[in-house]
Image (cartoon, rainbow, N blue to C red; front, side, top):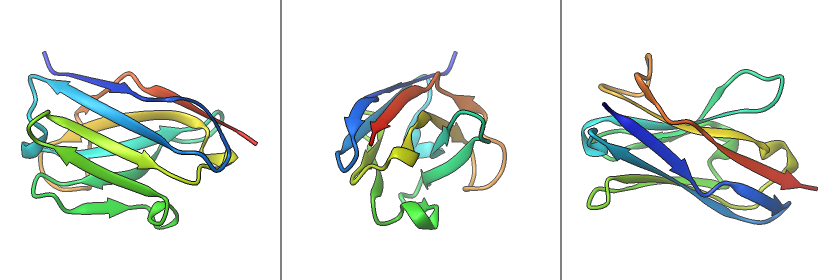
Length: 119
């Protein structure tokens, strides 16, 4: 079955950087839209950034300057580079994939990776 596995989370000081990775098995990212979502304690899960099968990228406006989503087709891995991290970026980060465009239900989800930013 399809499996998405995130890695790269951890504890970082405010102002620092992390790169999250999402690797897939039995799913080819270049044929799907892949999104990075996050969920902070007590808050709803939110989309952070996404990349379409064609390579177009989308960011929630407030993340555009600090986050970069990218994809390595050879490694079948999607990345989220996060710079200038803030305390409020603390959350569990999930990657997810769906056939089609940005909007709609994401069918495949990873287990999440914790990002903790200390102030």
